[in-house]
Image 1 (cartoon, one colour):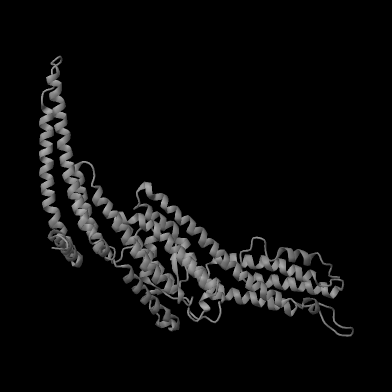
Image 2 (cartoon, one colour):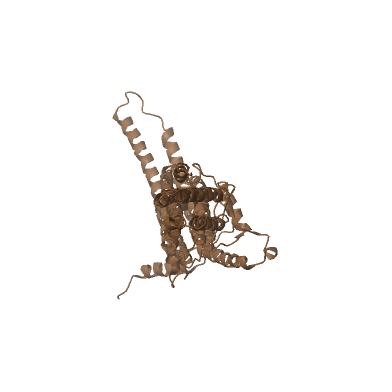
Length: 495
C-alpha cells in the first residue's frame, strides 16, 4: 500500500506530541530519555576503562623476542583503539538522538519565557557535560543544537522587542514622565556593573509592564505636588547626574534589562545578546532622530505634535544622555558573560556611542539654528534703530529694543532648558549659541554706520547690556560672552 512506512508515521506522531507538551512535561520526557542513555553509556565507559587497564597491564614484549611479541603489542593497541572508538561512537549516537528531540521543538523553544528556556538549557547542558565526560571528546551534537536554539531564542526576542519599541517611539509625544523607584533600582544595578535582579519574564511581558508604568507616570504631571507618590522621582540618576526621561525611554530601559538577564541566565545566549543589544540601542537612536529632528512626530499618523519645541529637543537629548551614561556599564556586564574569544563583539558598542554623541551634537546644533534664526530677525533693522535722532529730537544713547529682544530670547530658552538638561549640557548648548551670536551680532553691528558718535555709543550700550544679561545666567563660558563683539565695541571711540 501507499503512504509513509509505519515507523515514519510513528515518529511524526511522537514529534507532534512533543511539540504540544508544556515545558515541564517536555523536560520530564527528556529526563526519561536521558536517564537510560546515560546508564548505557556509563556501562560502556566502565567496560572500556577496564579493557584499557587490562590491555595496558599486559607484559611488554621481551627484547629480541621476535615478531610474535611485536605482533601481540600491535594487536593490543588495536583493541584499545577499537574500544575507545566504540565507546565514543555510542556517546555520539546518544548525543545525536538527544539533539534530535531538542531540534523537533526548536520553534516552540524560541518563544519560551526566559525561565522555561533557562531550565531547558540547563537540562541539555547537564546531559552534554555527562556525555563529554564519558566520551572524552565533547558533545558536539547537543552543544551545536543548544547554540542554534539560543540564537533562535534571541532572534525572536529581538524581533518582538524591536517591533514594539518602534511602535512606542512612533507614538511618543516627547513629554517628561516621572520615574518609578523600581526603574532607579534597575539603573543603580547597571551602574554597579551588575545584572538587575527582577522576576524573569518574556520580552512581551516586560514591554507591556513598562508601557503600563509609562502611561501611569505620564499622568503625574497633572497631579498636585503634595499628591504625587513618594516612590516617583523627576530624574533617573546615573553616576550622580540626573536625566529627564520620556515614556519610550523607560520601555527601552526595561527591554535592555531583560536582554541582560537573558545573557546572564544562559551562557549560550550571551554572544547573540552582545550582537543584538547594540542594534536595539541604535534603532532607538534612529527612530528618535526621525521623530524629533526630522519632525516625524508632527505627522497625524504619529504623535500629531503641532511643532517640535525646545522642550521636545531637550527631552530627546536627555534620552540619549541616559544611554551614553549606561553604555560603558552595559559593555562591562556583557563582557563578564562572554568567552574571551567573543568579546570582540563588544566593539559594536563603540559605534553606538559615536552615533549617540553625533545625535546629541545635532540636537545642540538645532538649538543654535533656531535661536540664530530668531536673532537674525531681531537685528534686521539694527542700522535704523541705532541711527542718530532727527535734528531737534532729544534722545539719549541706550540699549536698543533689538538687543533687548535678543536677550529676552536667551532668557526664555535658558528658563526652558535649565530644568531639562544636565548642567554640563546646558553650559555646552549656551556656549554654542553665544559663539554663533558672537559672529552674527558682530556682522550686524559692523553693518551699522559708526561715523556718528551717537551710533557708536548705542553699540557700546547694546554690548554692555547683553553682557550683563548673559552674566545673570551664571554660565560657564571659557571665552566669556561674545569676545569678538566685545572687542569690537571696546575699540569704538565713544566721544
